[in-house]
Amino acid sequence: MQFSKEMMKGAAEMIVLQALSDEGEAYGYDLMKAIKRSSAEIFEFREGTPYPLLYRLEDRGFVTSKKKQAPSGKTRRYYHLTDKGDQYLKKRAREWKLFAEGMRTVFKHDAA
Image (tube, rainbow, N blue to C red; front, side, top):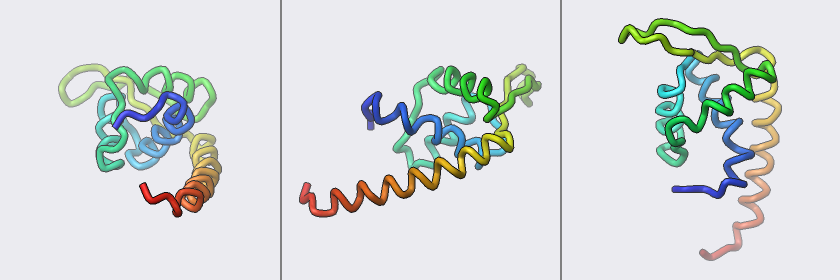
């Protein structure tokens, strides 16, 4: 499903950070596959979409990256969640859970 740009803007950062937390380390394409798999295919980023976000997260100190040679022989940039990123993720995850619970409560009377 395609979500609005506004809705995804707030969620994409958390989705990527959680995927890195789950995976430990990943390069862009594997990260996109992990997000799709862990969300039961609800979230699917187009190729290239997570890279600007990863660069911003790296600038903020939430992720680090390093180039490594993949088993295929290609050199890839692998991303890893930092301690600062992990703390940020935990804080924001608590906010998201409370927000989602509020939204479920608001819409519980919705028949649609």
